[in-house]
Image 1 (cartoon, rainbow, N blue to C red):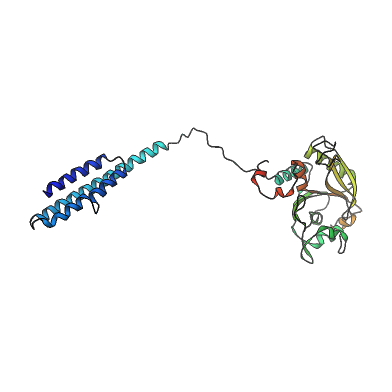
Image 2: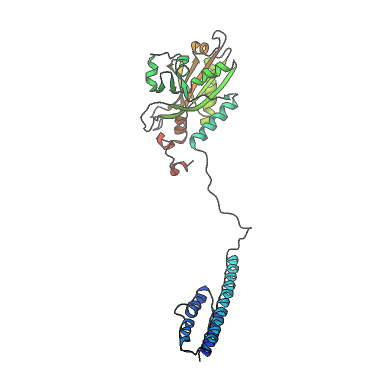
Length: 340
């Protein structure tokens, strides 16, 4: 009787395994037949009722049935796994002729973009690009530029002092002296870079910002050369219709000195909110290099003359893109940067 039950369990299990459509069905057969509470376990509990002669024979048959069912389950599992792999390959087939998805790439920051434009303009006029240390000696940052200790201009710089003789540079003008010390005229160079002043952060001030220093030294350089150079620069940056004007000013390192305005590129000089109704926007300061500065740079002021100017990069960017808050340039807000 038990032999017939074992044969029935074997046949029924093999049939269910064959009909199973997935691993879940196979697992149900395994648990139902081979599990601790499965059909085969129930049969084996009856072995104690058999005679000593029948017991090993029936036990051998039960083990054979178990082994055959386990083997069939393994084979079915491998078959199902292969079928699933084939189905996945068909579902995941890639058409290599289809165009790829567009990739969002980065772009230049507005500060870098305008700086590159400025560099290109001056390189086109024969200028070299120079650089200097941001941690600077007091001598180069002040004294060599005709700003000796105790000079009132030092108070307006709001300087970060590292020691009595070392500062974070407050301007890119120290590069002038370093250029003149290493190179004899003719000199044509611009020096862009970061500068530092102890200013409170607001819409128009920052303790870290950027300047672009310009320097030309040669025989016979005049204020007319400065005006022509700056006019060419303004027209290239803001358009051929741009006009400029120079106003008298005072800087310790230039004599005579001036500030330069450009006609408002939004209203064309008629007056608007950007230019505060004046029609003009101040963008830089400059003038003829002071004879003492030339001498401090190792250049004979009786033979050579030169002009220098300083641009605020943030100011150029804000005017070019109508930005009213400098902090936007440093917040790294992708909603703002994405507009450029």
